[in-house]
Image (cartoon, rainbow over all chains, first blue to last red; front, side, top):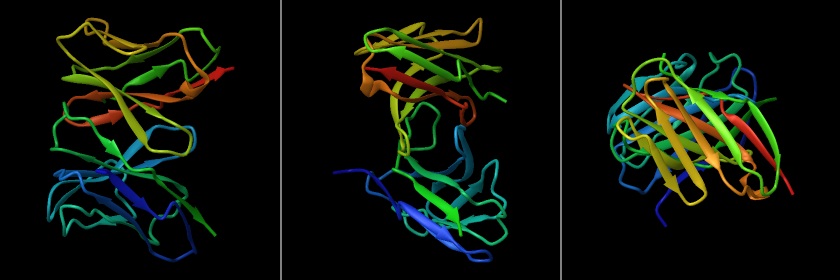
Length: 114
Length: 108
């Protein structure tokens, strides 16, 4: 089955620790996105990537980092600089970065601080 | 900002009733998309309506777009308990931007 896979489903971070969230897609999509969702809220864009080895900051990039070394993979690192990391993180992909293309979402990672 | 704002923020109805959710936005858009999110899950694309379209149907879903009023509505007919979810409108300008969503509860 084609799709987008996020792991782990639940993640706990200790203070001062960096953690990495995984996102893999086998849809052959060029564009990939990371969103943060706080309880009862909408989605806010953290980072996006149009193509391999390229990525751009979204609205709330501070305290986060990404890489796009392979087309299939777009991992997100939540660094110790992110002081309020507890949230639901969603990865999405798009055939190409165009607003008339729909987004395909993973099932999300819930990050909590210990 | 082109961010869509959904109204109401929460809606509770009985099974079998129709559910209507509204979305307003501020600037011109290329298209508007609606997504659904079950609790604790990712979003699923429901329907896309282009700026030159006024109405679109997909099964029990009906979406309208009024570009003069900068608003859209999503109608779910004959609702079911399984329709319980959050629904987001996504405005497509330079980027896709999400509103805060409407939380729909359909009581059996």
